[in-house]
Image (tube, rainbow, N blue to C red; front, side, top):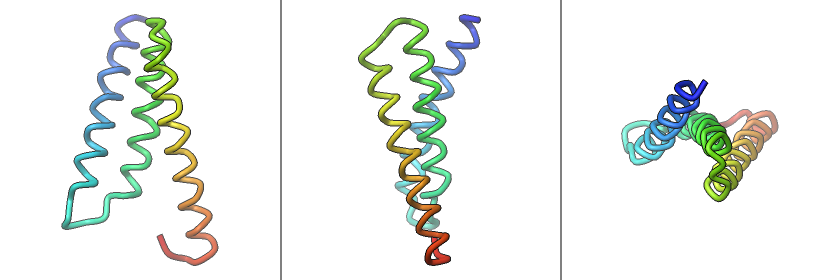
Amino acid sequence: MQTLIDIMGWVGSFFILLSYGLTLSKKRDFSVPSRYLNMVGGMFIAINCLYYNAIPPFVTNLIWSIIAILSIYRARKHFINTGKQ
């Protein structure tokens, strides 16, 4: 179980860094995949932190994931109302 939790933490960190890197791209809009990478990455890191009883980073990553979820929700709502991303 500990190995799985460790892998989730590393994958979550990679997802967050990848998301940030994608936002720097000028050639293409990666905002949609970045939102999902932030959400999943934050959740994975939060699970890892909770397992190791690291409460401050757990709360930070939980809030990070909630912000990503709200961003996805708002983008979908905007798409439904306007038909544009």
